Image 1 (tube, rainbow, N blue to C red):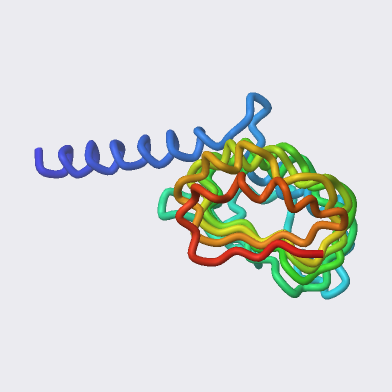
Image 2 (tube, rainbow, N blue to C red):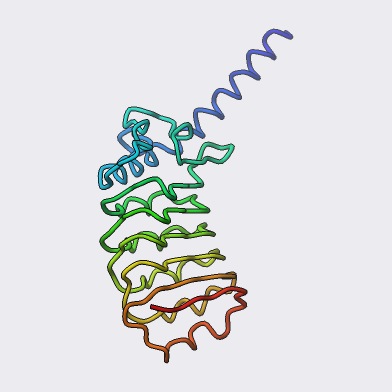
Length: 201
């Protein structure tokens, strides 16, 4: 009877692990976070080879360089600062729905900042500074309600600070560098309890 109890207990834990793993799988049986990361890799040039260990056949990206995971196995961090990346940022980043920090500063990424970042409802820190992104300041900021720190400075952004930024009550610090900064829109930030702010060209 004692042996049977142990067998049943092991079976219970095995089922729990399988269900947790299955929650990350697409209908085709592919880990959707692996697919998102591989799409990101395909759009980037990897000068320092930090992404060479990213493998489409892997079912677990938690051992990959620059990737951090929760105890449950979800990708919760991308720490890719100062690693010599160029190319563009894939919209698939929006499928990493558990991300808390996304740190891509001081690379040579270009093109637009994907609007799909607005789907990252758990994002707390976003640093895209020191790249070559060329677009208007993204309007998706208003959807990042848990964001407490953001930097988009030292890019080639233009346009106005989006009005929805005024809804980011947890935002403690932000920095923008805007090519055609319009000072009249600074009121958007007046009601936020930020400790650090920098807006300039």
